[in-house]
Each structure stands twice: as C-alpha cells, then as structure tokens.
Length: 294
Figure 1 (tube, rainbow, N blue to C red):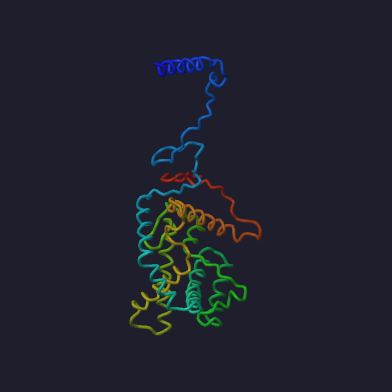
Figure 2: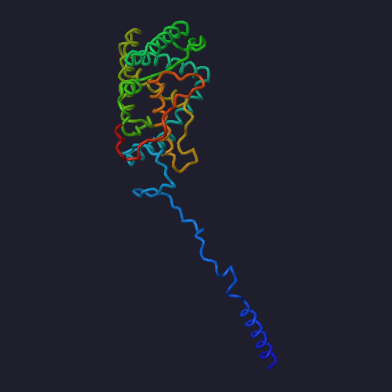
C-alpha cells in the first residue's frame, strides 16, 4: 500500500513539472529556417547535371564511349599480362647504357619522319633541324647510337603526320582508344597510319642499302618488337594505378587537352620563354555531342 502511494505521489510531481514548460519558449516557436542542404547524388547516365555541379569542361567528344572503354580494359589486361612482363625481360637482359643506345637509334630513324612532315608543314625550321640531327647522329653518333646532336644543343623535336593533318586544318574528330596503342582520335589514327607507311618505306630503303635480300619480314618483326619494347620501357604510366575510379575519363581528358595544346604550338610556333602558348579555355563540347561549328 505504501509503495503504491509513493508511486502515485512521484507521478503527480512529474506531471506538474511537465506542465510548467512554457509553450512560448522561443526554441519551440521558431519557424523552419530552411538551412537543410539538399542531398547530392553522383550524376547518372542520361541525367542532366545541375549548374552547381557543371563539369562540362571535363567532357570530351566520345560517341563510341562503350567500345572505347572495352578497348581500354583490353589494353590494361594486355599490358599487365604480356607487355609489361616482356618489358621486364627487355630491361633485365639489356643494361641501361645499351637500352639508351637503342632509344637513340630509334629516335634517329624517326628523324626521317620529322624531316618529311616538316616539309609537308612548310616549316623550314623543323625540316632543317631534323635533317641536321640525322646527319650528325648517323655519322658522328655511329648510326644514331649516340645522340651527339643533343650534346651540341640541337635538341630533338619530333613531329608526325597527325601533326601535319592538324596544321592543315583537319579537325581531331571523335576520341578513339586503339587496341594496344591506346588513346587517340580519328585524325591522329589516320596520322599513325601515314607514319607506319613512311616507316615501312624507310626500313626497306635501309635494307636495300645494307644488301638484305632475304628474311626482311623476320627482321621487320624483330625491329618492330624492339621499337615497341623500347617505347613502353620509357613510358611510366601503369593502368589502374592512378587511384581514381574515373581513370578512363581522366586519361581521355588529358590526352585530348595535350593534343589541343600541341596543335596550338604547331600553328603558333614555339612559345616565347616565360609565355605559355595555352590560350584556350576548357570549352570542349559535351560528350556524345557534335562539336559546335564556329
């Protein structure tokens, strides 16, 4: 009985305390202030982006996005399973001085490409530089094994048919990922074909001078393999090591912008020291849309 009476008295005291709370307390009568931030989600495919998250400057004209991503994934697997292990063998078997000589010899042969495209671009400076480097390194540099021209402050400035097409005013076209070769564009892919054709004629001319009649196919395969291994050994990029889940988009953007800047430099000439030649703002058209006509 005493326990029930004590419980009743305690309940009455609690109810009285609650009743003393004023309904006019400012904290209970304030109107909502609208400080709740809206939830932000990552943009989805086919969904328009708001102005607050406008990332159009990162977009690249890529109408073959799905196919390109498949090729990018294939290149990553090929690189990891075949290309890099072969490069490891190449760098293990050949010491660094020998690999440097191979790189110099390959670069010396590429001077023919730079010389030819310098003529096609009506650029006397490029043509004279490539010709001078080729003569110096082929003679004093022992067939290009030593880069004597660079020691004499005549540095290499390689150019190709893709640059020539750009100088002629050919637009880059859609972004393309080539099997094994990697990022490119329609214009640059056509330029690569032109460079390969020129290299084929150049090497056949070299075989004629050397008196090689038989086994040219096998020698050509070996020479192309050495070129490929030497090229990959000098490229530090490794697939899926950027730490970004958007590596494909990042590589696509960087490649496209680099080529835009290359074309700016080709058309305007070498930039003055201390004055960057980059003038454009990042106004690349949105992905999967035709570039705006100027």
